[in-house]
Amino acid sequence: MKKSVFLLVTFAAIAMLAFAAPASAGGGLKAGLTMSTFTGSDADLIGVDPEYRMGFAVGGYINHPLSPTLSFQPEVYYAMKGAKYEDGGESLTFKFTYLQIPLLLKMQPAGSNFFFCGGPDVGINLSAKVEAEAEGISAEEDLDEIKSLDFGLTFGAGVAMEKFSLEARYTIGLTSFDDTTDPDDVKNSGLMFLIGMGL
Image (cartoon, rainbow, N blue to C red; front, side, top):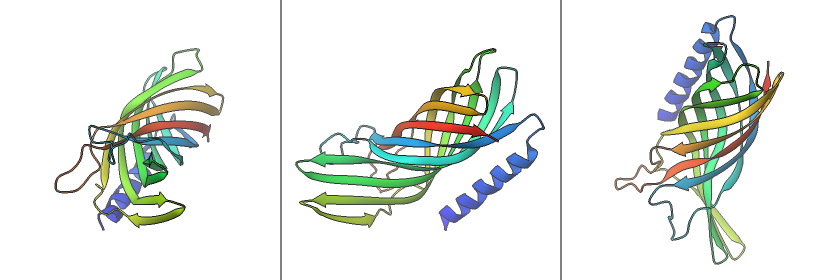
């Protein structure tokens, strides 16, 4: 129920933002590869360090110019997150999906194709599963004690070529996603490599 409310509020906010966009605002689509992992003092959940879990992200953005070199760029993505643990032929893979909402300031120096961005990143958890595999046998189950909201900071850089762009980003988690009564310090963090197309 909470997730449904969060989704409705998010889509309503995005719709209002789009309709309120000034004539000078632009927008587009982005998609790419995600490499997610866990960070924090308790990230070694089973006694080994987490590895990256590969996934994808797809979404869109609206760009509001603030000055000739600075703009505000809210975005929304469907993004895969999580992490993978391997030890002695056994593996444990955490499979999370989020509605990701970065709220970025974008700076592009005058006359340059290169740009830089950064800002807060809010995630709404859509699903959380864990898959265990040993001796060729695997089993998957849902995780219930995962926080609905996730907060982080995103930083990135890229190059713009007319209507297209290429960029790399890193998001560092600020809050633990563990929603148990005695939560571990474990956060979502990771890399994102995106291709963008302006509309």
